[in-house]
Image 1: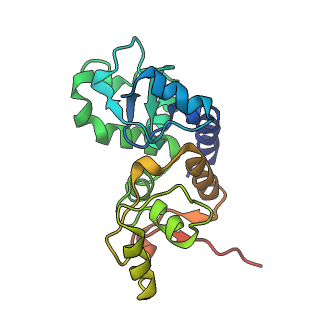
Image 2: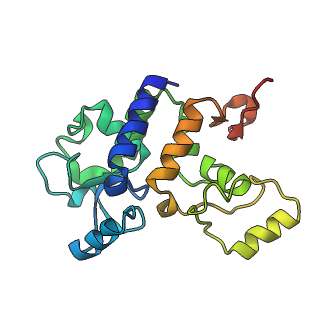
Length: 210
């Protein structure tokens, strides 16, 4: 892990996340009327729940600008490229959907993450860090939402299932910038590990020595 770059990422999301953070795409633009966006912002609410256009619909001179939104990997890629269009997209922006792996690789290189670690951070898969923290700390992350009814989650818990032993996932759009900053900070500080070979790729809390 590159802690210096983690700190830069956290600072960037803290600064602009309310208006520019969305886990729905690597880089895109909000797909909502200006009145809807202004209404949210006037109430000091983040824009992460709004639908977004993916990159090929962002018609601007630079991809990372005041109109663009992005996820954790998108912000990391922007930082890695000094907020300029990455080389892998300069010629064929229309091929955005085929470049998800390039976003992952640039972000991973910047943050010092393995592919295994980043899969648990960038996505809402069955073993994501988002699922782990929501399962164990729902009071700390009240805005994270399950893709299944709460009654189903309660059933899993009442049957003493481990958080990773069911197919429930977190709705990516429910991850706001504050939750992202909090989880990223805990990862940087060594409170949470994203998973490695010894943990079979499963995130876990790190117990501090007394």
